[in-house]
Image 1 (spheres, rainbow, N blue to C red):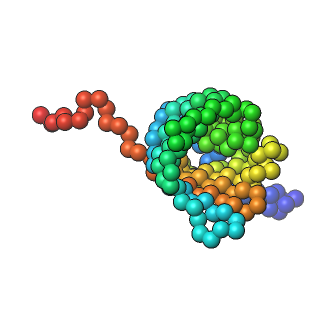
Image 2: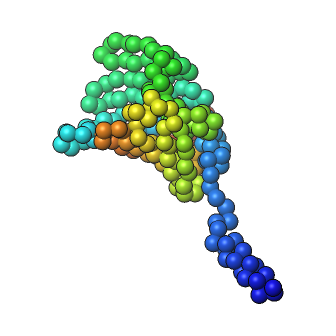
Image 3: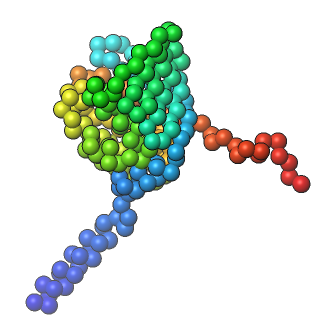
Length: 202
């Protein structure tokens, strides 16, 4: 009996030592991301299309303002802008604008919420559309999203967002049919406080 009890104690001790003392999870990641209320970044994107040799390249800028404003300005290979404000999506290209309601396009709404929900630290919205898995630590994390909405899942197999602390640095999407998009994001340095420029030390 005493030996049996000793074995149980040893098993518990080994299990405790093997388990991480602190697990980085979705609520913790969302708390980090929610601290950044706005930001701007540059991006480069490679789109790998099934049947085409070599990737399709694009580059431009991203800007975000919590809770729900997101703008993607593509500068190359041709200028176009996608601006999201709440439920309104505005597409601009060649001097022409087109405005749509996001909820009329569930597939696009899910993709927008993947990015917007992550940037704003809105875990509830992410979990409404995706099954989420967080790995890593605050200094280097990965968020894997698998669509739960059948209409989005019919087009997108998975989304992987990676970053460091409150900065999103990468976005990878794998589409049904074999296409894949890989975006690298380079956040701009925060603007200097007003009056800091040109200030000299006495």
